[in-house]
Length: 208
Image (cartoon, rainbow, N blue to C red; front, side, top):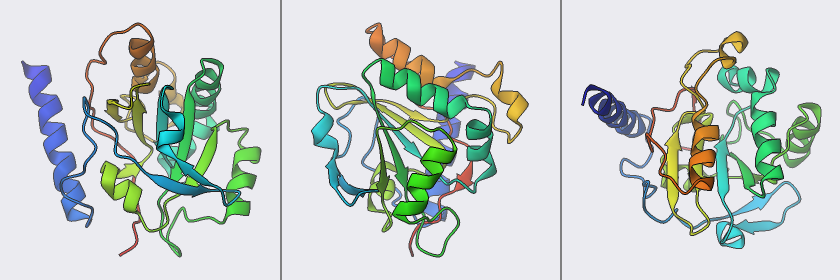
């Protein structure tokens, strides 16, 4: 009961943060329900639709390369390891960029490609959400903010990458990796417990 109360309290606080930062107060993304449909341009200018991946598990990762919390997971190789394992398991990994032009984390297509190469990252695609419509629809608040969608298009996990809300690289080791657990649970045909956690990181700099 105490654990459930903590989860609910975190969720309530998250909603409050969404409202405070001007993001849609009631996002459409909810675990146990279909993931909101979207389309976005990738680094090559191609339009990518979530519907393109129906029948496959999909991971959504909101990112900002300048955020110290994001740097923690890329410097340690934690995010890349998750991406590569997901790829090996036939899971689609989409990295989303919602930083507005002129704000921290905003990059050009060329810069996004360079970052992927330099960090040895392995997403299936990097998508631009410059106007913030997708991020607001999903209620993405911080970077990294993680989402797992099952092959039927239903959201099974929303929240943090792990249970260590710090910028210390050393904290990656020994952390409870919620994304890895969510993918393992889905593979085993079991529900993720908990399906929602409080995401931590840098506030997404949405377009006003």
